[in-house]
Length: 264
Ligand code: SF4
Image (cartoon, rainbow, N blue to C red):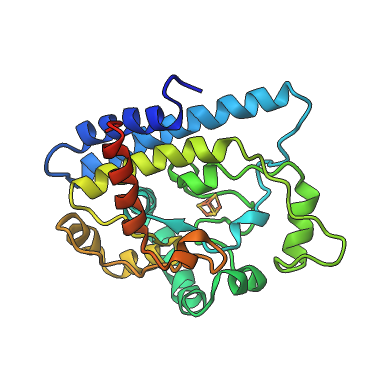
């Protein structure tokens, strides 16, 4: 861990993101800031995964294994823009096929809570259902990058049991170390976006993408300071749900703490 711990990491990534965004963020500036955040987070995650490999533990995730890609994925508008940018580089017929699939799936997804989505096993919009590969792998959001299972068979069992634990089952063991580090980078990026007047309130990845495909002007409205994406409620067992706070409120509370301690 770098000198200064997680707060030092946030301060560094916050400064880089502010500089990349500039005073009046453009679409290109946001995409560059997200790419830089992803590179920073991925470097930390890869370093931890390499350490794990030498310590006797083994990451169970493999290319084509996608049991975890069938749940609500919380993503802020900036990371969503990265996914949307990847999709709009596809051939028109491929984009049209995604749109058709989302026209079918989005109303169902919108009606489901977190546990119900897991039970329904509706795949993420970005998942190739034949190969199990992420079709926007280079732009996948930080929650996807930092979720590393230590036991593939436990993921499969949870998937088959529709997200529920049966008597005697243990939760999927997940590598914990990447989460605070990658999370700190994400918080830093969102602190910078919020400082530039851009909403960081998360949406559900497939729903947000569908909304953007239906109305590509939404990102311009977001860049103009609006919050045009459907908001994803936090899981009911989460701290944020218990406190009844918006994500923006939590990010701003974090800013107050960091400013108060002279970190940023
Ligand atoms: S964005 Fe990619 S990695 Fe993340 S849930 Fe969707 S398909 Fe899986």
